[in-house]
Each structure stands twice: as C-alpha cells, then as structure tokens.
Length: 65
Image 1 (cartoon, one colour):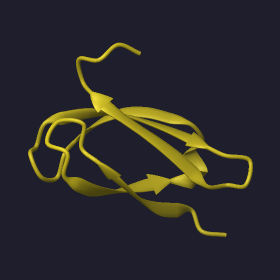
Image 2 (cartoon, one colour):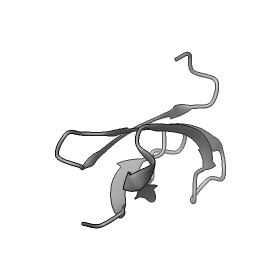
Image 3 (spheres, one colour):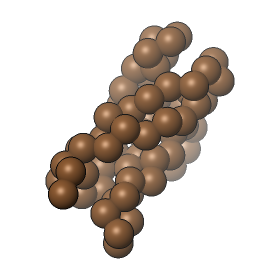
C-alpha cells in the first residue's frame, strides 16, 4: 500500500495545471498551500475515499467553506 499519491488538478487563481503530493495516511485534511505556478495561497481539502484514493478540492483562500 502506498502512503502518498500525486493528484493532478488546476489552480483556482491562474488555471494552470498543478500536481499535489497527498499523504494518504493522514486521513481527511484541510490546509493552505501556495500554487507552484503563481504562488498564490490555495485552500486544499483532501478526502480519502473508501478505496483509499484521494479526492482533492481547491479553492481560492477567500472563498467561503
């Protein structure tokens, strides 16, 4: 079983494709990470599905919820 997963997604600010490295052993997570392209802070929400895969949602730092 792998404890990390690479997840491809898009920055909510600049729209560029980015890759996030997700720690699957940490369970559901919420944190701030800077975009590797435009360096703006993104709110990252990670949900670990029942099959062990990660679902990632990104939003700009000022979006609600």
